[in-house]
Length: 168
Image (tube, rainbow, N blue to C red; front, side, top):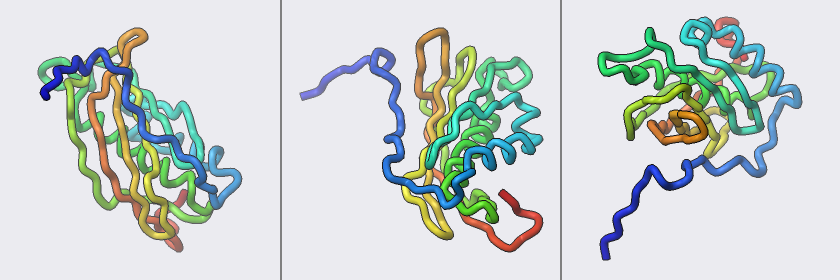
């Protein structure tokens, strides 16, 4: 039996919230906020870190004309960069204070045009690891009180220790 569903009328999909993740660093939230503040790329596009929890991070980004592609939608590269940061910092929340996290792979699916007043980007750890972590990302376009899923990301993050050029 085929059923037609108006996906815009459904509530926004959200990643399953972390349940029993135990951060290795009790001061993880402050560390993640300080690190995000040092990211010049995120500052350049106007991305803001708005929520930090063990295993999950939320970034927000306002629509701006200089961040769009030729049709006026937020450019996929901008969306991908911000979503990659949300995923990386989600993984970082579970890491020791003396290590860094780097993306080693991600796949992004654009599921709708990135059209909205602002964007909510959520990174959620699926499987934390000592060396490799798997993280899921979701990007939502926000228009008034409505949210619409516009992209999903599957990301693999690597823990990096003992390098002065890669810090938390």
